[in-house]
Image 1 (cartoon, helix red, strand yellow):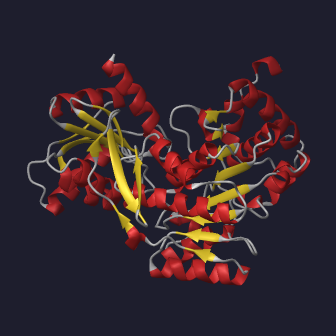
Image 2 (cartoon, rainbow, N blue to C red):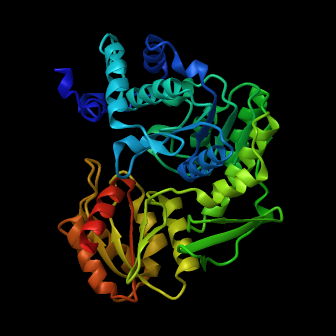
Image 3 (spheres, one colour):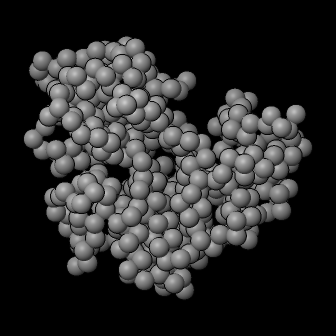
Length: 435
């Protein structure tokens, strides 16, 4: 029977798809596995936007410094295994099978079966222990306070990226309420690096840090200067200066220098704690970091950008990036969203930069249908007085891209965005069309 064991199907079993937050199950599961997390060093990262990019930058910096680093992120875009990486390499499938079997043995003995994300967290932490990594950069799955990654008892550093309205049905309907959940990762005496949040969120973060006796750091974004994107030897590059030091990144989004600054500050805090990281490691980490599906330019003729922006902040950042990188072009948009997102507000941010819109249905049970989204696009376009904007619902992602490339022509611009769940299929459809 075990010869046919599919670890991905087991972890993704619909019965485990619970939003039941809390630490009891994951603590019991990890204890049954020998508490692997207690022998690991962590950087713990929460926030609404920028978590993944900040994690990727920091993991690459640590790797450049010769530090063996585990990276735990979600969701995946192309392959399930990319959620668990060591020194930039996905967990091999055979190892995923082996470790998941071990986790299953403990999980099946529990009175209350762990959730999907709890299983994933246990697999990651056990694998990182077996790989003897020096440090793990772990991204929170949902919220922070009750997220399964919050079994981390004393990380080296807690990071809170930009906080916005997301998962409001679970985390709260105000920035202040959501900030309380995110700040729940702050541990007594552990330094905290926070994005310069809006006042309500920053107040909650400051209060949590003070109560924990934790030193709070924030980057000084007034010292961040971002010149225009330029063409490097291997493609477009975004340069930036921070505190008079020059950096460059292949991640082109207008927001990426700010995410990079969070990683730069994190690396410097870790150096102050005794980790052997020099400025050259930091520069190389920023320059070499990759993070798929975040304002990623996949091809040209026409220029094709895929972006996983899936909330209002993400849509606003996308609009800013388009204005920065492609100031002379209007985009053919390929849009798919989840029904529980603030999709109307997202559209308001991006539609002014569109010349045509094709809607798709993301591969998720939470998806808003292409037809419903098309109707909403028309409503928003009318309200914004975006005149003569063609809108159509596509049957599938591949036909949407084929139509979009035709509409854009070789000199045009196609932008696919709205849901991280669509990114993998969009990339696959793009590859098929380009064969």
